[in-house]
Image: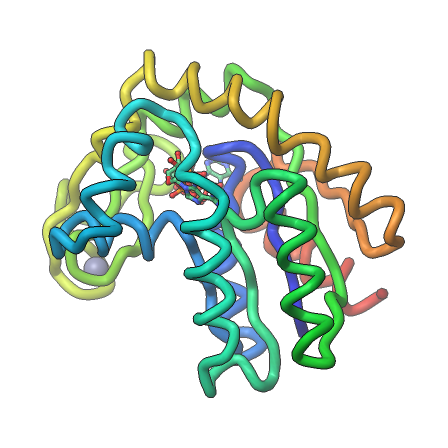
Length: 215
Ligand code: ADP
Ligand code: ADP
Ligand code: ZN
């Protein structure tokens, strides 16, 4: 299963990708996670990416395209993958098509999650993430059992630097301008599935699985 999860920041891509990883035994490839790891490690790429990320803008296409091209060559991608947060521009989508073609592969599905802007702001301001395993939580919609402690691994939960209201509004605008055109891009290719992301996490999960099984 070669899949893209498409949707604005806070739509639930990461949350649903983790579930699909377990269901299909294929890796989640999150460019946001890879970039944050590079920032944390202080690599040259991380230092460059940090400014764009903290400002709520996009990291340049050539950087993320290179990351994904390398990642798709790794052994765990032989049976498929779930791209989460990539592509975010038409140039990235074109580069992905070329990479896949070069590997003799094709996308199976792109699932677009649709969520109202005001709900996105509430989701992102309440998002918490585990420092150790990366699992996401929400203070209201998906709280951990013990406040600020990960249920899965006991790690500490933190709030991302870019999950502040002003940066969130900027990221939503960037999505509208640069990423939302990908909905019609993938519709034209004939791989798009659209899903209402306003429902509770568990319902979105069930509907996503039945959409994938039906298609
Ligand atoms: P994305 O990866 O698309 O940015 P996340 O999966 O990190 O989004 O979800 C953003 C926040 O919203 C997280 O705090 C998550 O727990 C919460 N969340 C995800 N899906 C839902 C949902 N269907 N309803 C309510 N909250 C959700
Ligand atoms: P969210 O879960 O809120 O959608 P991500 O974790 O996917 O956010 O991304 C965080 C930040 O990392 C983005 O705001 C952007 O600066 C950068 N980033 C992640 N993926 C990409 C990409 N495909 N192209 C450009 N920038 C990216
Ligand atoms: Zn954890």
